[in-house]
Image 1 (cartoon, one colour):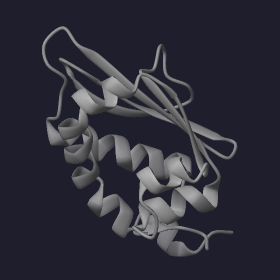
Image 2 (cartoon, helix red, strand yellow; image 1 turned 180 degrees about the vertical axis):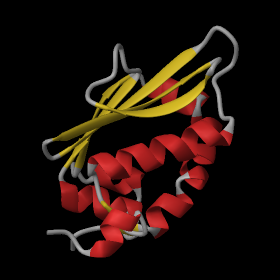
Image 3 (cartoon, helix red, strand yellow; image 1 turned 45 degrees about the vertical axis):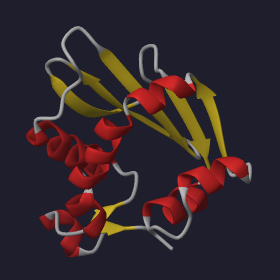
Length: 134
């Protein structure tokens, strides 16, 4: 049985359904969106867990499972994802070291870097409440 804090929603287990739901709620509430007529999706594969962020002119979401036509896909181990999320390893360094594999259009990342940076800021509260399991 989980600690009572999990049931109250104070602590979120990393990559759990509840964690993804909280990330989604934070992103939806942020008002972030892609420019009119544009759609941009980033898929994350962390061990066996797959989720994605999608931005369009209606807003932004975090969803479980694979993205339909993602611009980019990142694959990494859970330990690498935790190190990046906690600021112990930069995403760029992880890609260069081969700890994160990258598929897709690097220009899409460059053209949407401000949107992605703002999304990372939106997730600060979710990160603060995350039990990383380490």
